[in-house]
Structures are given as structure tokens and as C-alpha cells.
Length: 281
Image 1 (cartoon, rainbow, N blue to C red):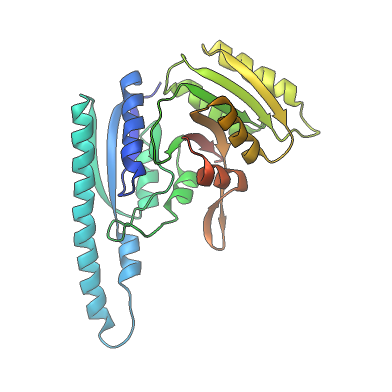
Image 2 (image 1 turned 90 degrees about the vertical axis):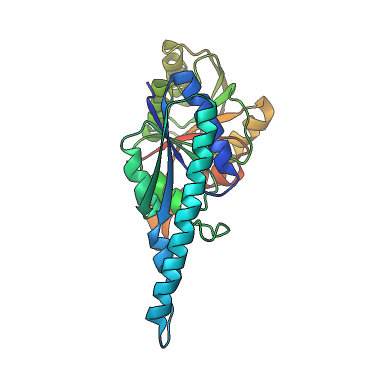
């Protein structure tokens, strides 16, 4: 059962959409909403560094200016969030924290049941057009599932469970069923992607269906595919009019920082609808 929802706030247009989805879930579940804005001092420090004579003095001035601007933007985001959820009469709290955006969000996720945030976050408030690598870092390290949303809102009524029968996909299925964010009155479709010689896709499908039925859902089997999972998933989204994808995800450390796995990256980049995801631990 879901009791606490964390909404990560930034200046991008998907943040109001994330707030709307969080409100919808809170209305169905009675969960309390937490709006979190982070003054990313790590990004500020990196952006304020320079070189040459007197660079230390100017770096301090730049850092102070960026910090002040970012704190003001964080307060504005909090005020907008607070006004929106108060209008709905929901239980809520607002928090402004300082530090690394990804680390602060991961820490707060330890004490929430679900993270809701945009697919294209810009957490460096002083430069809202600057992309950050925050999302992959959060996804890899957070405890609990995430709902990643696009730039437009659609009420959730048709859900696609995409599974390969592995541990990550199964854990995501368990998370969705156990916190039950959108109720059981949904059209549920189940598909198996990437059949392999070690497991029977049909067995996994039937076990998934049986599990969903036991929890009050009425799922329909879509198909078994043994090709590019991300393309097959998005094809079914378009064909069936799906408005939520439930899927396992992956992120890993590389020499260039934390990156998403191929399928996860493709879905985040191209999905027109929200993604409910959990990940490897």
C-alpha cells in the first residue's frame, strides 16, 4: 500500500505533469505528497570554477550568485507545488535541500513508496536549459519504484506489462501490484519480450497473468516477441492505446558516468506515455 509519494521538482514542463500524476495517485490511495526542490551545490561549484589571475575571487562571486538564484528558483517551485496540491485538499509537505540532486533524491526515496518525476529533468535551476545526468544516477541507486512522466498528462486506464521473465521485470510487477497506484479497474495487457532458450515465454506469461488475477486485475495476453523489446513495446502502445508502461529497467556505471541500459534509454527517450519502472539493486 502506498503512503508517501516523492515528487522531484525542476523547471521543465514535465514537472507540472508529474505533479498531476502524483495528485491522481494520492486521490486514489490517500498518500501524502512531498514536493522536493534541490539546490544543486555540486553543479554550482563546477560551473563557478575558472582560471587565471584572480580566478578564486571571481569563482566565489559566481558561486554566491548562482546559489542565490538557485535558492530563489527552488522556493518558486515549492510555492507552485504547494498551491497546486492545497487546491486539491491533499496531505502534503514541501522540502528544499542542498547538495547533489541525485544524492538528495535518492536519500529521500528511502522514506517514500514512489518517486514521480519528469523524463527530461533539468535540476540546475540557475541554467534551466542545461541537461543533467541526474535521472540515470537516481534510477540506479534509488530504493523503490519510479514513475517517469512525459510532457503531457493522460489519465491512466490502459496498462501494458512488458516482461522478459527476469528478476527485474518480476520485481517491478510486484511493486506495481503491491502499491496499486491506479486501482484495479484498468485494462491490463501483458507481453513477453526476448524469448530465450532457457525459459518458456508461455510459462512466464501464464504465471504473470495468474499473479495479476490473484490481485484483482483482469489481464489479457498480447504477444510473445523475440526481437527488439523497446520497439515491440512502443508498437503495442500505439496499437492498443496504452497510457502506462510497466517495465523493469537498467542503469549502469561507465567511464562517462551512469548510463541507462539500451531498452530503458530508448523507452525514456521515445515513450509518449509514463513509465513505471523498478531496477536492479
